[in-house]
Image 1: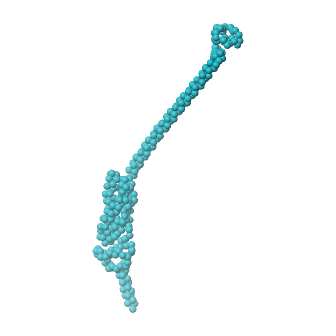
Image 2 (image 1 turned 120 degrees about the horizontal axis):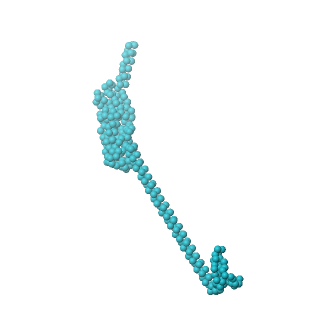
Image 3 (image 1 turned 45 degrees about the horizontal axis):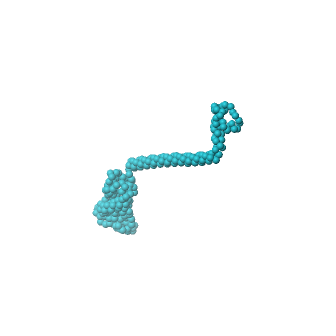
Length: 296
């Protein structure tokens, strides 16, 4: 009885082991390939529980989700202007034909990545070689990415892979070129600033010269008006003197004699030697009687 029970337990254990070796599951995020002696016998791309021949069939599963290839270091490409640019890109891809994928790259994801990046880099090199720096940086960037995706996807189909997207994260000039461009920009800005300062100085000199000219004109016009007013005053004064002479010739003669006396005796050192009968003493005689010879 005990021996029969042991045999039964051993048999159950063997059955369980055989069942465990015969069953496998496929997750909804995976696809599976069943190979027998190196030959693919079945592909399972739907989730569920499946069976295989134990110890004979081999099951390999592959991720069916969208995968990303992101380069660590940017690559160097040459434009149509023979100038180098640094390009940083990434690729979105997924396995769509597990059997073809397994046959082409033996199911090695690293080999698939290398194949895809070679295709993308070849496309980039060809497209960048047709365009200028301006085109690849801003002008035709979207067009380049569309062309690369189409080319990469066409080649990737040969290994059972679909390229979902190719994106250029960064397109820059090398550091030494960027420094050179920055230096030229700085020199150009300094040249423009110097030119503007020169123009400002020139304009200030023009304004200063114009102000000096206006000042001289104003001064000349003021002097002219002053001289005109003075001449008019002198003319009016002469007219008044002439009218006074006509009205009273004797008073006018007396006034002119007083002016002559004032001018003659202005300084104490002045000496006049005149005849007593001179007309110069005409009004003095009338005021103080006869006089002697010379007067001071």
